[in-house]
Image (cartoon, rainbow, N blue to C red):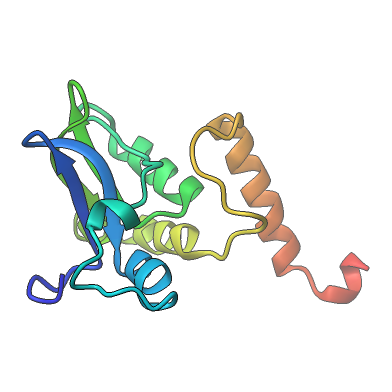
Length: 148
């Protein structure tokens, strides 16, 4: 991770089948904090296994919505049986998206979670998510005394 200057790496089995992702945060929390030896701790033991992925056929809008909803900065791109073919990063989006959208997307991805962070399906469709997010933003923009 240091030599490539990256904050996460995919964990694969059998060539390219994605089974997890290990991040610098995973290392800090699951290795360094409990005092484990990073030289002997297998990456498979600390990797995040509940993944959010897309296929190459998904649209950029789908990717942006998913990144904002799940508050992830990287999305593995998989085909067939979770065969890893790439990773879409927040930086990739910033380089290819329209300037107006970039700021909004980065803000949505980076916003602090409003409750416990859960991964996987939320049971909320994208329209409901967008409406709730817009309502939350309007409340944040209101002066405090108008909300009380």
